[in-house]
Amino acid sequence: MGAGREVSISLDGVRDKNLMQLKKLNIALFPVRYNEKYYSDALASGEFTKLAYYSDICVGAIACRLEKKESGGQIRVYIMTLGVLAPYRGLGIGTKLLNHVLDLCSKQNIAEVYLHVQTNNEDAINFYKKFGFEITETIQNYYTNITPPDCYVLTRHTDQSPAKK
Image (cartoon, rainbow, N blue to C red):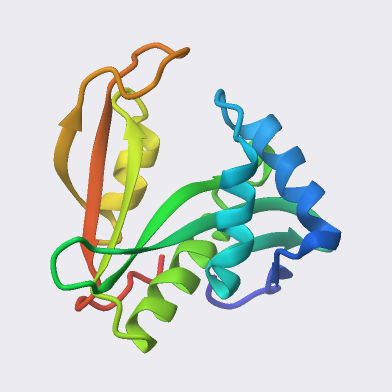
């Protein structure tokens, strides 16, 4: 942001008492409806799931699930959702949310983070590529009720340092 007024962006954990904020954001942001398992996974991930506030208004969130890899049993992080309401995009909120998770991975020696992105979501694909994510797989017919139904798997090995902008 350089010189000038610093924008007030803060992150807060997701708990039972503010879970409805995450539910409302997801309805506004995504064409998919999430089930209760999504929300229980988000709560169980602890610090890996955060709400973002811009001047005390909840405008974005990242929700993750911690998984054990089949081979070797190491933990990896699956980013279930990351979204910022349209009027608040471009202010560094998504960057702050993603860097928070990447920093946690680094501190906890978690070597892999991955997510699914709809194949036509070029903004999201380009955003993640800035942070060292690479397309590692294409899954046909991943989504059932949206077009196109295909997704990319984007993966990042966290032995790289997070991007700052």
